[in-house]
Length: 277
Image (cartoon, rainbow, N blue to C red; front, side, top):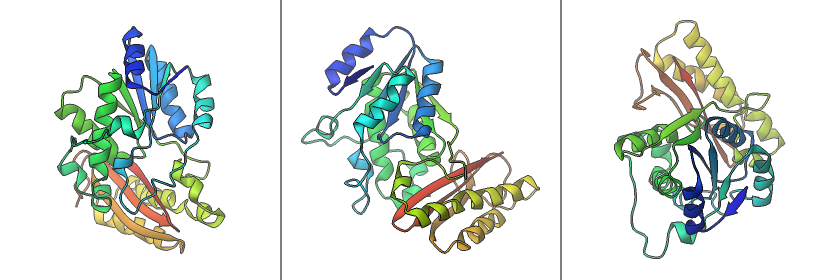
């Protein structure tokens, strides 16, 4: 496994590869969710590139960039057994050199949900992912379903900008009690960690209604809110029942739909989602 920080060394390594290349973009502090993406990429490609870069442009002014967990040595130790060819660890100065002024933006899909709560977030995401695609030239890129809106936005960008690659969406990895795996879970204290399962419970309650035949989207939203409100440590930011592709809020479910939410446990903001249909 080669650990590379320069762009020229990455491109030289990429040119040496024969066969398909799978890319797993990460911000590091890896958990089983990330490792499941790497394993899937390893199974489906001749070569695998993992990028580790905490992207400053997707963090808002009051968000946790400086506190975002970082442990490169730990990350590398987790990746070594998985058959990764290259780990690329570019610097912020390399990705955003002095005078930087070029951005990639997807429009309508970035307005609701996370976009409404985190202005500018997706502009940073799409710009860095486009740069990672350009640098690594993958045939397939692997993302987790937990970041459902991010997945939708990146899929749109790939289509609109004619990137010659396939976006592979992998299932959310969960703890035994249902909590979606996230690097931010480490911020939770013991009481918050126990309370955080309320996101999974709220989504599951709405899904059970759907499976019993309920198709009124507002009833599903109300059920999620009711479950969240039963947990005193949880502060709901939003709940949503939206069209899977357009992310527009639904009145009645007819095709694929996305149940999603953002919830604060103390100062830690968690997101989760289920896909219906």
